[in-house]
Length: 508
Ligand code: SF4
Ligand code: SF4
Image (cartoon, rainbow, N blue to C red; front, side, top):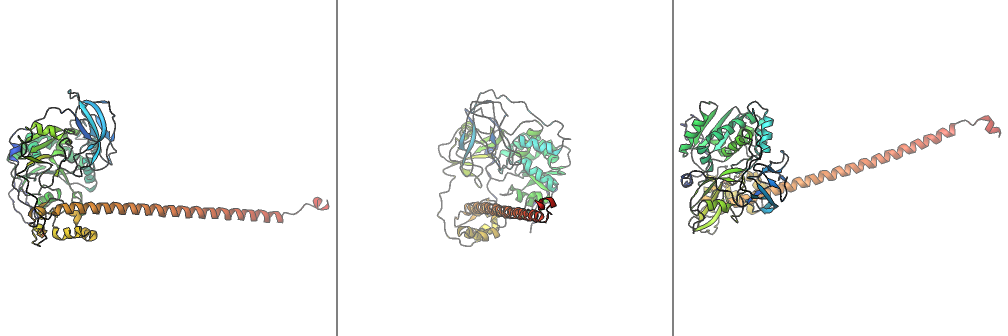
């Protein structure tokens, strides 16, 4: 049962205890100590045509084309994804397959642009009088501007808001609770540009129909609260709430549980509870898209870790090679050992720093040799129960990992493997060094593949049945036509026999 652990929030909101989770040592102060900077233009920008969940955008340009900043490079139907835009003006050098900074390490089609150094914008297209426009117009503008969730999920924002509208969104929950220990890009955004975040909240409120807004930040973000409070002003429908810095409290489902005490069903969505959750960076991108008519072509990125000389936050163009950002931060230290995209808990190792920053890249973490624990040999499970104690999804990791290892997929699905958020808390505490989260990632992949295979088999069976029914129908129709023909012939000959012969002809 959830119990309050901090009833004294500034808004007086009653908070509920997060199930499981870990108190991790934060390392944010080091990247927050310097102001946010915008690096100089790189020599090349690599813009993947798929940076969102859904279908890839189809290229609208070809090699040799000149493009303006903000010009659309690729588009896809809004039911399948979002558009992709040029981060600066220049010349398209190629459209080719390149690695896309994805956990799978996969490659995909990218537009390679050589900047001309002039950074010339195309004509902005804001939605004027957005406060009175139909929500549909705002959602269309978000799709056209390529806005996706910047918290890491990169789900198209217009689709999420549209679903919320259909299911009756009452609360817009802006997620500023950045719980990974090194990431501070949302904190710096809220501190430096609080008005952009609040403007975005207003647009999202209009687009989704939400009656009020909760903006959640961590209780250790001192300066952020004051900046946001000033931006909110006298408004009474935006509530600022500080939540305790417990990992993974910034997860969508976990934050809802802490703020409302409600649990999103394992097979459901926050929309089922009338809640639309958006990251604060997404809100800022929404304001840019609708109020300023500017597409999503840049984002705040934390460049940090003991392996980089001057950790800080940067406002980076999408498509910038990672090496360019590290260079702007003073380069690698001698003991730099591993480059991770995201935080130490949920991030993934990047194979090369020539890969680009994409819409999902919130943090580039350069770990030193000292940061990396020597890999420990995996030991048998001792059934200590620690993993279950810290699991925020209320799962039984020791049991699940056995089911996944032995391929008991139905049992794993019955034990809610799909509800695992891959937070890595169980890994962190396991005294036997079992890579539990990696097993669950693999298991979830298997369940998805099986679901895809089942859907394909069902589809094939439906097509086979439909074909068999069509052939049977055609046969039946043929039989009926033949029978009708025979009947008509019989009737004609019978009619002939009955026809009386004239007398004259008989005499002849
Ligand atoms: S924490 Fe590790 S050793 Fe303990 S029960 Fe879980 S899997 Fe087994
Ligand atoms: S990785 Fe999955 S099973 Fe492990 S603690 Fe997180 S949610 Fe629970």
